[in-house]
Length: 186
Image 1: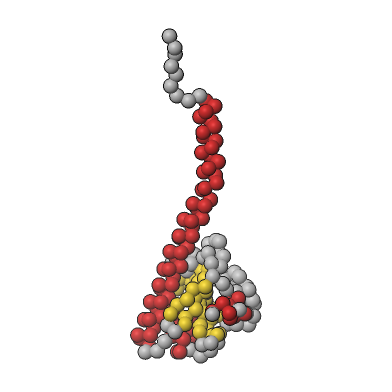
Image 2: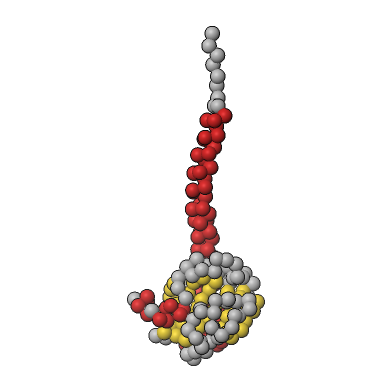
């Protein structure tokens, strides 16, 4: 009479678990990155929507578009218009490349030297940086969708918004790059 054994041997089970572990180790980082990208994309859309709503509220209340209400290089005026519509924690005029702005940007090379920016964070931890040094009559707004939390990388959680003909364009580059590379806009 033959003994019939059902099941797997210990070595077969260990080999199978090893293969599953290797496959998981290879695929898990990709899955986590995709989830993070979806999260940052969602935060970017939320911040963009908030800015667009504030923009149109300013237009309806003031009877003029925000960029036409402030003179060139008056970032504080431009930021103040939006600050009224957003729930803010901190606001200040900041000159990039001169010092770190506590509670806002730690990247001192955010824009060209000597530019004045108006920066504030909101209660939902989004940093906004308004720059009225316009290129071809177009202001810029930097946003960091998750504040001081990492990765603090352009195109991941930091973006530049450019308002052109009442439309909002999002770029994965800092303003200084956009200032020095106008062909990006074409």
